Length: 339
Image (cartoon, rainbow, N blue to C red):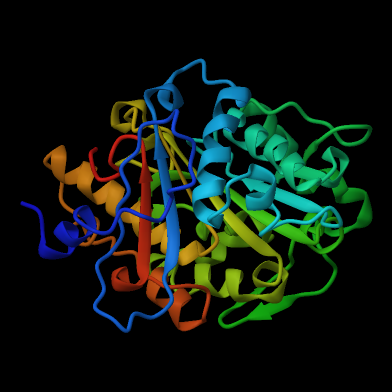
């Protein structure tokens, strides 16, 4: 049964992405808020069967990312869209998730390639996670130097000390951690190229929890549904001051049994979520998972004892909004709530 709040999502306004290319089928939806409305956080969900294909290429994923970026930034040209978030002077770190079900390499590579429209040179972009071996196992081609986009783990910087982590403990709220030198030494801007999957403790892995992979001791922060720890990591200036965009790989997400990869609970959603507000992206991602769980006869995450507590903590820390009345969803292609 669709709730009143979900109904409002389905029947919202349809003008937010008028500039998107006519070649792609689309339906546009947003949350209906009575005026005077506060500023809304926009989340773009672009879907197509091609995105769920086993042989998805970076070139094909890039086409969809360009459309999503234009809808997100309200721009007619990809370059103008990406330039709202990145500049040629940026050193961009694209943080992927390689544990369990990984961020699809074509999605991360598509993002790296798409940033060229903002005149970010390839050699100023790093695709990264914790360990080289995890990146390689997830299908990424390691590249530590030379021309082009680099790809390596924090451990590749171990020669600088502390296994590739910064020398000084950074504190934020209830966490005290060493941050990856990829963050502190190598980047001025970050994109969270996360993957959408269920998490047995936090409820959800998406844009925010992805940055547990940026600290040396995430194992210490999994109690109480990883809250407020996920929020505290992302509230630190190392992340808050650099994070520009969340691109969530929902091409073949996992609605149960995570974070390990469990193919029996993965499905061809064929989507990518994009937003500049990481809390809003996670909030919409959680709705996708819960709708799929309901469709499969499973309890909601909250009913299953795994409410996503860190979203409220993140909102309290000013990282974004989890309030559905302050989130605008732009749905391109198949409606985002059809799971």
